[in-house]
Structure formats: C-alpha cells, structure tokens
Length: 82
Image 1 (tube, rainbow, N blue to C red):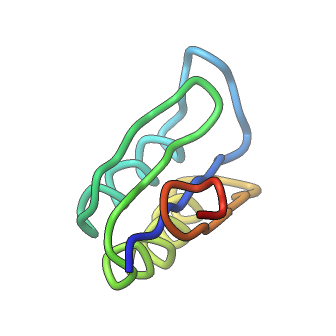
Image 2: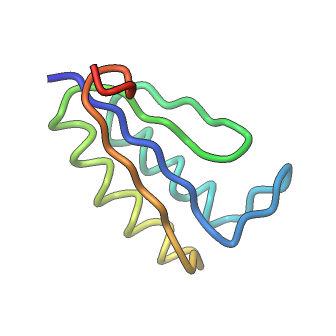
C-alpha cells in the first residue's frame, strides 16, 4: 500500500533549518521512500513498511538533535484521501 508521511519539526526557522530538521530529513531518507523537502515541511512517499519505519526514525533523530515538537500526518495514496 502506498502511503505519504508529512512532517514538520520545530523550532522552525524558514530558510535556515537547524540540525534537528536536517537530522529528521536524513532519517527519513535512510528509511527508504521518496523524500521531498518543502518550505514548511517534508513529505515522504513510499510503501507502508518504509514509511512506518521513517516515522520512528524521524522522531528519534529529531528529538536527539534538539527538536521540541514534531507534527506528523500519514495518509494513503497521494495524500488527498484517495
């Protein structure tokens, strides 16, 4: 099943992602799936197993690097509910 994970890591400083944001992005890439970094968050698309692994990896890496909040959303398909 194809799923999409979207996450935002705080503290958030547009244009200057801190080490906690970069750590989360690196963790998402390591789990597999396609990673797209946007101006306000990061999207990972892939199979359920890869994206599920990415959730745990992102949370652990971001918190270890200084994140104070991580907002996550997981959707099926392309993220529009379909």
